[in-house]
Amino acid sequence: MEKIVEFIQRKQLSRVLIGLFCVVFVIAVFLLGLNIGNGNINFSNQAYDSGLPASLNYSTVNQEYQALRQYYDGKLTQTQLLDGIKHGLAQATNDPYTEYFTASEAKAFSNELNNSFSGIGAELSQNAQHEIEIMSPLKGSPAAKAGLLPKDIIAAVNGKSTSNMTVEQAVYAIRGKANTAVELTIIRANRSFNVKIIRQNIVVPSVSYKILNGNIGYISIMTFANDTSSLIQQASSYLVKSHVKGIILDLRNNPGGLVSAAVAVTSEWLKPGQEIMQEKRGSQVLQTYNATGGDILHGIPTVVLINGGSASASEITAGALHDHHDAYLIGTKSYGKGVVQQLVNLSDGSVLKVTIASWYRPDGQNINKIGITPDQVVQLKSGSTDNQLIAAESYLSKQ
Image (cartoon, rainbow, N blue to C red; front, side):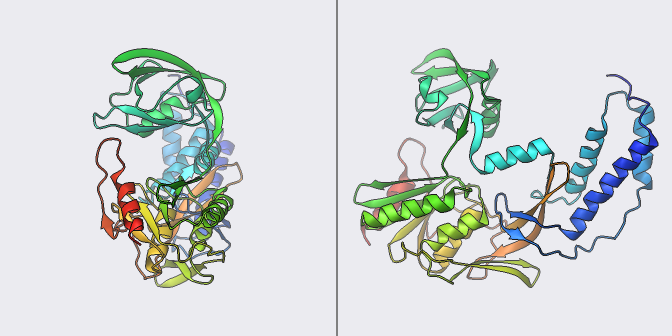
């Protein structure tokens, strides 16, 4: 490591401190941005009194910076210093949902929210032996073209074993820039082989739908993204024209999404004007969200499937449909994220995601760190049979 360059001037230091002040100022006044709760996005131009001081004493920050200039045996850039300060400000909240994203991190976050990424196009899971397993390659994806099949075990990514990886770690190891290669070691029927796959840009629709046996409609929402509002309307229209006797809305492992998308989905069932949720800071109601019309699924027996991966916007939808008696919940307790964040876009393309409020169900409950307990608790058994889906079909067949 090279000794930190000595030509960093006081003028550059002043820019660092000015940048710090700007970030603090942004936090204090909560500039107009997009509200997001792990994806819960809505528009707001309200500013709130955070209770923070109007200015900070930067003397010890300057002392620390001078110590780094003098003693640090390594290489630092002004960008790294600024990002470090801004990351630190967000982390000082001790709030897991308040985060600072650099410009590149913000772009990745946005792409992730809208199911857009560069990879091989295969949904992964972890089997009972804690192996990384392919659930299904997307139709026409690089994974499908390479011949990967459901139940294939990914033993290694670019020669690195996946034995200690989580599904998320495996996903990020496989993803990369478009038109670059990733080599997977696959185990199939006790046979091991390597396959090299060229990554491509992939956009996955957030909503899929079909009709199950017994003329039961099935809608799965992966995330509440930009395309969800239009796709849920298509799904609803198709199922109504098919005269389905019931609907299963699958929100399992859906981590959240746009508030506008959650409102659009819920409005397919609720009557116009019915409350979906309220945002509050303390006892102050900041905003109330109501059904916006549509309600073409109102009156059709509906089951919502939830589990521990159903969070945020998923819980908004599940809670509202349940509280208005438009849906029966089956599965396991949801994640429990009852707070709302706001995205503040900074001038350099970076973004601050900051918690601004809590949200409440129509019945007045806040589910933060509590979750939603379904009407019928059904644990998902290991193996290929989806007993939660079977329970939903059984319930609807009796309606």
